[in-house]
Length: 120
Image 1 (cartoon, helix red, strand yellow):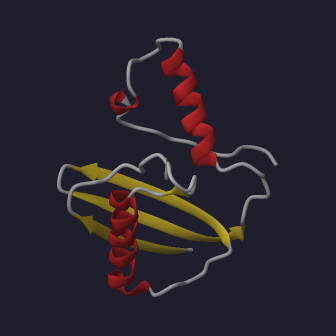
Image 2: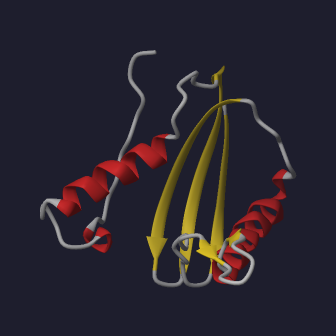
């Protein structure tokens, strides 16, 4: 297992929803999201890791602060999971469903998340 720790400087930026160009109908990612994704990539590369193109299992742990995000990335030796759905997308669907029925008012109320595939 390889563990990589690094810091993403600056205010954390949540992923923006896709937008549609009204004239062309083209779907695009908001600029602020693209810029932050480049910042994340730059912080990883600056940690001296290059592009490992890891194909096995991955564990990601982040701590969010007002002025930075601390990241611990584990590149595991076990094979990548064979499931078809992204775990983070399933988690988002569960959270949105709970919000829809009033379990809480806004996703921003969530302060900790844990998710693990079992079986398969």
